[in-house]
Length: 435
Image (cartoon, rainbow, N blue to C red; front, side, top):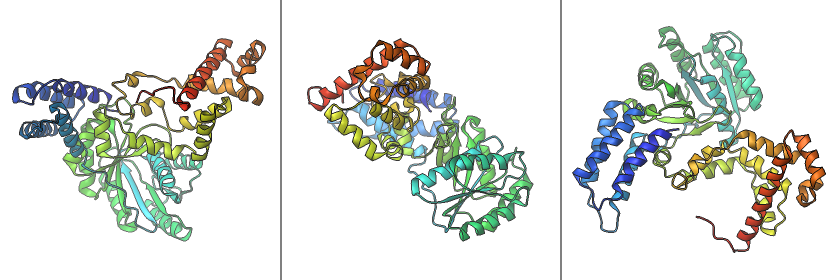
């Protein structure tokens, strides 16, 4: 997400790092590039104008301390203003109700039903509490079945009454949740093709009946600046508490994320980062600004790792690495845990300085990982624990069993052997790591 914008901004900012001081002359060209980068990312023109004027004014007005590089000072100003543009600080969900009621609204095709399932999964993981999904989209064909299918995949209950009155369904669902010890009620409402008066009235009636803590609008980020009109239209009739931007992992310029809060005063609370049911992240303006400017997001990376990786398994693997006993069974287990974190390319981008090290161009084909897994699974437990015994005849059997070639088996064994040697050097203190 924001790759093109990030590259353009970083290139523009890089120019000032060689200057001895910030002057109106040397900042003008750079501000022009920043302005073009934001406009090409589909950021609203008025927002771009205000942003660039503020950055320029602050940069020229700052007294540069002799110990601070002018380029570093300018980067700080841009990051601070970008953070402010994105909302300043993250706005957590209001989950004080018992149960807490969250209502998702949006246009048809915005990804609302999938998003509500992702949100239920997010809340269950984050707070270790019990969510209930509620099917109130009684108009779209198969909407109820879609939600039930998603609920089945996640093992989260879905409350539905078929094609009944959505207002009554919501009311009955809240009663059901109270009686059965649910912590969160997530109401999936009907999408609409435009701001339809009748359907908007239905949303108002649901809101008045169940009084939700959160009313969040799901928006397809690929809509561009039209999203601002949609947010404003909904917010005029419903008191929106937040926005969920979907499809930020796709081919989107991301400008809507930089315009939403400034133009509507509605905070972004979540972003969709993949199609998987764990592909929803809470939105943090400061972290996002850092990622756009190539500073990484090590906090989010650590949080992802904490959520996905089994601490005891990781500790066990680390000890085996240190003692030189790390084998292919350990490698397979570690690889499976890393896969839970999502696409490796996305994780690499969160590492500070990844772009400078040339890591952001690394592409990891999921098929390669699948081949590695298939090769290891085609080995016997004895072979996985003692890779040295794998000779020609065993390699042929493993290649045949995994649907790969002997060359691929050889490549894996060679890479594993090199990795073990490197681990041994690191644990003995004979190798200096590049960070």
